[in-house]
Image 1 (cartoon, rainbow, N blue to C red):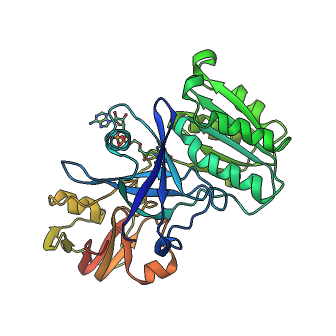
Image 2 (cartoon, rainbow, N blue to C red):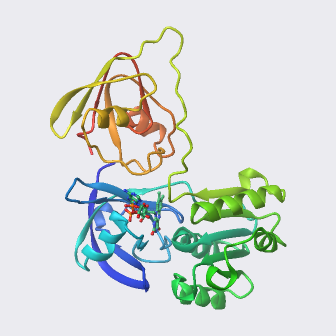
Image 3 (cartoon, rainbow, N blue to C red):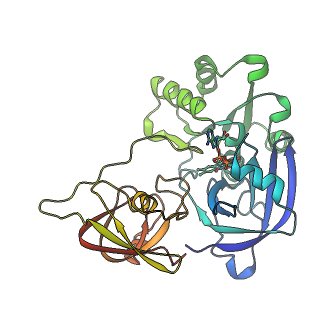
Length: 339
Ligand SMILES: Cc1cc2nc3c(=O)[nH]c(=O)nc-3n(C[C@H](O)[C@H](O)[C@H](O)COP(=O)(O)OP(=O)(O)OC[C@H]3O[C@@H](n4cnc5c(N)ncnc54)[C@H](O)[C@@H]3O)c2cc1C
């Protein structure tokens, strides 16, 4: 899980506040950067107060677009998105982790019903292109935006509809003329797609409304696939010690070439303990899916409350997610100095 430097081949101004960044992948990294439609990349953003990470979904589709592309929408006051817009130039480089994420097309052949809001369209574009290419599934996209000029990929979607007559349908919703999305619109979009697999990505309140409306209308929860751009705010899953198991009062953390003895309390994640001790390791999603806070365990027992990224092989190689890692036993030692 190390960072790789990728060159920015092209920057595309999609709308006044959204830009796409097309990345070049050198031959020796091609296998590492193979991705599935719907996955995302994690970028390290250098910053005066210390680097941080941001995730951006791939808006390109594998096997269709020759180079991977992410699309970043400016967020008012946002550190990462504004850095992408203001500091990056074609020919520059970005530090990137290999693709990750589970928001990918299911293997079935049911119709696909997608709900995208604003920049939440990026993984949808990738899923739609892939589904159109790979099978015969029918797709319907409900696409909510503030107003007409803020519709990302408007022309590209029009072209896709023309090129795939009868297979892709798009229902546009514009807040400027229609107000916020209402449940009746979601139910109208569901009509005829009751057996579909649903894919949701957009602002939190939009997704909450779509999710609850689909479920109340009888769509089984396992058919509703959700990608969150913002932390869900769900409380971290507690990890309890097994009977008689001790909790260390301090853990050893190797960080930036130094060894730190860090106080540790029951219920803390390693990341929280590290921060409380004044360390500043990278992190991003803090929900166990982006691997920005990756480290390796050296000694002792670390239990991950959630893991949406590591394979059994990664775990066997002692990779841990420090935002999800809880420590048990008298001695625990981990290192961040591997990524
Ligand atoms: C898996 C995944 C995929 C994603 N894909 C995409 C994508 O394809 N395209 C895309 O555009 N985004 C995507 N995102 C979102 C993206 O990662 C960033 O969260 C987004 O760009 C905002 O980051 P930022 O650094 O600009 O904003 P931040 O600096 O994190 O700020 C976010 C918001 O908080 C407010 N804020 C910040 N600091 C404060 C403060 N101290 N007090 C009050 N308010 C504050 C800001 O004003 C802003 O509104 C994705 C996220 C995830 C997790």
